[in-house]
Amino acid sequence: MTALRRWQLSAYLLLNFGFFFFDTAMGLFDVATYGYFTRQHVAPALFALDFVMVSVPMLAGGWLAHLLNRRFGVRAVIGLGYAIATAGFLTLYLSGWYRVPACLLLVALLLGIVFSAILPALSRFIRDVFGAGRGAVLALKLDAIFMAVGMVAGVGFGTVWFEREGLGVFFPLATACFALAGTVHVTTLFFPGVLRDYAGPETPGRWVATLAAMRSAETKWRSLMLQPSLNLVIVPLMVGLPAFAARRHYGALPVIGLVAAPIVVLAGRRCGMLAGRLVVPEVVLRLMVGRRGAAVWPMAGFLLLYVLAFLTRRLELVFMLVVCAHVLSNVVAGAVFYGVQTEFPAGETAAASALQTQLATAVWVVAAALATLVMVVLPPAFTIGLAAIGLVIAALLLHGHGIGGFQSPAVGPIAKRQS
Image 1 (cartoon, helix red, strand yellow):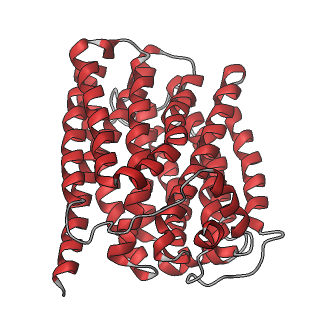
Image 2 (image 1 turned 90 degrees about the vertical axis):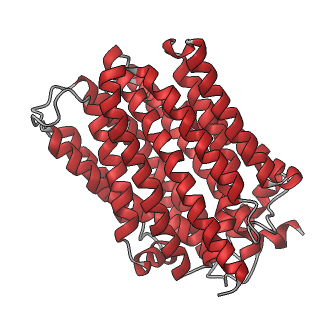
């Protein structure tokens, strides 16, 4: 093993150590939000509006962050993103503004800043370390262990402390977690051989040309469109079920005690995310990317399991159904990562990841906004209908009508269209 390879592997392990703190803070935020909403008996639409507020800055800031990465370097941009988020959480806590309900929307904006700064660059770093194919599968499973376990830890720890301390406990803990994650991540990026040739599209307008080029490369097109298609199905249900659970009286197990039902739904979601990415074999990921319509079946299974979760009156069954549903959804989400890492040349991984993230986030915002409107005028269970419509649209998007055949990963459509 060369010295450069040892540096890269050490950087990757340290990077995931930082993500443990990052995702612990994310779990804490979800618990704080759901717990607060439940205690205050807020309108169901606010569960969906929270999704919108997290996603809008990712959509608006994603292009800007990508341009800044090219201009100033990923170390400076990622460091600035973490500094803004950490300072924002600390200010909210020390000033006492966290007691104002609207502060949760400001927290969502801060989280969006961090997300949009780091995701494309880190996708390229993983490609440098692990390569494509089986390397992408290994990276997917390792990421799931660190990131999803961090989220599960945040949910569990946050649930215990939220019951005792209330909303305010999130802010000092999140400040510490983001400060630690930022320090670790920025330090990691100074290791030799890390993101040495990061690159991506220079202007958002060229991403339109990139999408046009994808239509002559079926597997590349599907790699970009799997997550947006999945979001059409999962987002309405992910906001509808917690809002529904907050108002429903369940025959809960004694061990659950006073924990809010939406937090139990959240815990099921995180556990399903962890399990789905760990158990899926490469052949299934390749099938999701390579065969038309293959990804529609786990999406349909997700919809069915959530319908059952709406119908059951026992909270432990809701938890189990949500876990199983998110195992299926994360098979598709894993195929997104696999496709981007495997179907695009190494020099285009960051650009493809940035484009895929922006497409997925745009659909996320639209789906959450529609769910918000539905829950303003109708009960949360009607989000099932919205998800069913999303499944039909997803099937049409992924069918590949009018798309050309397969294209070798060595061919770089992004570079070709933008040279």
